[in-house]
Length: 193
Image 1 (cartoon, rainbow, N blue to C red):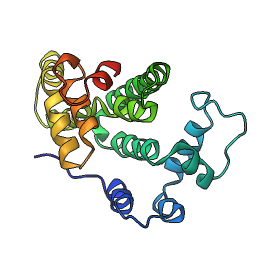
Image 2 (cartoon, rainbow, N blue to C red; image 1 turned 180 degrees about the vertical axis):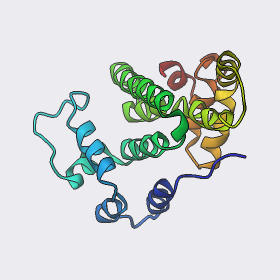
Image 3 (cartoon, rainbow, N blue to C red; image 1 turned 120 degrees about the horizontal axis):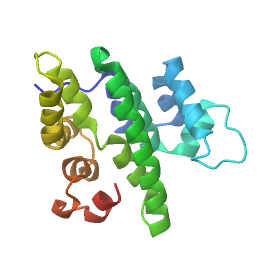
C-alpha cells in the first residue's frame, strides 16, 4: 500500500491550494523547531548566495519561494519516514540534496527554471526511501534488498508522487531519472536531474 502524505506536509499542501493563501498562513504551518532551523540554515547557505543573513522565517519563505519550501518540508517529513533505516535514509537525503543543488545550477546555467530543477532533484529518489521502509518488514539479504530498491524505486516513487498530488514534472523526473530519454513531457528537466 502506498503510504499517505505525512501530516505536516498535508497541512501545508492544503494551504498551498488555497487561492487566498497568505505568508502568515504558511508560517503558521511551520511549527517544528527543527524544520524551521533547517529552512533558515538552507536559506543562509552558500547555495542561495545571499549576502545578507536571513534570520526570520517570513524572510526565508519569501526568499526561497513556495516550491523550494515545499521540497524542504517534504525532505524533513521523509527523514523520519523509516526510523529503522535512519542511516540509509540520511544518505539518500544527502544525495538528493546534492542532486537538487547541482540540478539547480545546471538549469540556471542553461537558462531553465532552476527552482523546478532543484525540487525535482531533491525528490528524484523518493521511491528509495519508501522501499526501504516497505522491505524492512521482510527478511532479505542486503544484496537482494538493494537490487529490489534499484529495480523498483522509480515506478514506486512516481506512484507515491502521484498519490501525494505532486506536479507532473516531479512525477516524470522520479519515474525516468535513470533513463531520461524515456521522458515525454519534461525530457530536458529529466536529463538535468
